[in-house]
Image 1: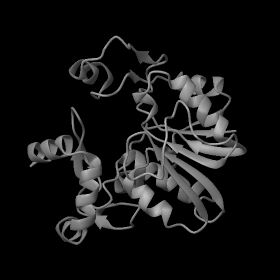
Image 2: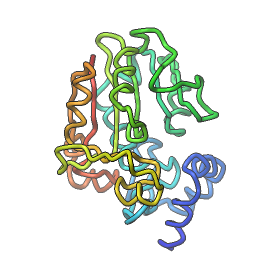
Image 3: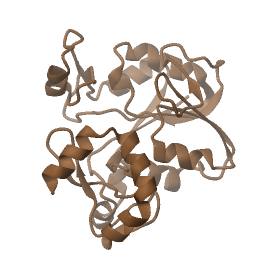
Length: 254
């Protein structure tokens, strides 16, 4: 079962998986329903989550219905419990949006929601993160998750995100990080997909971020918060929501 799941999850693009999950959601729920794990995004409970990972797989990582990973559930809980995102009027920019978030955020009447990406066919605006087509200080909230590790000139991308954020604005910029790594590991001479997977954990990544990720954001102008938000939950709730205890939620402010 694990080998089959690993093959499917690593070979089928996540956007396709999410579309399939939407179509098959009633059947998926009946098969996986139970009381061991709860997805806070849709509120449904399951006997287990699916394994996930490009290399070594993590057990109970992928929610059967929303296809959320640990980082998505942590972000949702943070937005729900620590912000007024679901009630206050905000203009939001979402770079390379996760499809389940895009679907839900687009329906929220308190948001003016703009999605952007260079390649995705489902976003509102085709945009290069190195040269965003928006006026200065256009957005109250910006989400940019698991994008910067794909871009060689990430400092310019960070500066563009800072430019289009309003004063008093905030955002969440998640990236693959190694908390034990002080300095970011990057080597742009590594271009072979197999070598990139070996060095950076995924075939299309150009770096592993270390804790100096926050220094890079600060150099772009942001105030930063390395929020270990999962640690605010009890061990039982972390297990129930399938969160990673030491995963950082990078929150930025202008």
